[in-house]
Amino acid sequence: MITQAALQILLLAIAWLPLAASALAADEYAIKAAYLYNFAKFIEWPPNSFTKDDAPLNICIIGDHSFDDALARLRGKAVGSHPVFVQEFPAGSDAPGCHIVFISRSQEPRLRNLLATFSKRPALTVSDIEDFAQRGGIIGLIEVEQRIQFAINLAAMRRAGLKLSSQLLKLAIIVDEGNKEP
Image (cartoon, rainbow, N blue to C red; front, side, top):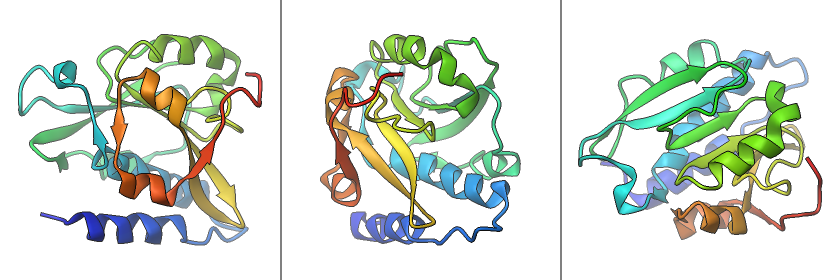
């Protein structure tokens, strides 16, 4: 079992992996997939989020994306007693039963509606859409000095009924909601 300190080091290492200007999208999305998996280790969902102690943790991807083989690496992994299950949903889907929802850039025109839908569920919303966290998502993946980092919207997190570890919050850029319109 990995300790909190080891997980913190892992997240720091991922956050500081440089993205060379010529890096392929596959490398970028491999890092983003690792973030999705590691975020799950730092989140406490409400008790009724899982039907049983060993129910799957559902990571859902909505819309067109560039994850390719990176998602396959998540299959077969577990977070605590919950096996990780990855589902891909087409554009226009509201992805029921998801614990973590990655909203692809292709869904930006629907962002307001998607965030309204997921704000009523105990789901961690994550995206690399520009200003995602400021626009009401929970975690926005951002590039800072050619490194992928993340911004967290605490108000959106509370609305979803999720609790994030202080270890994760220490590594994040905390943002205010409402500075950007979807």
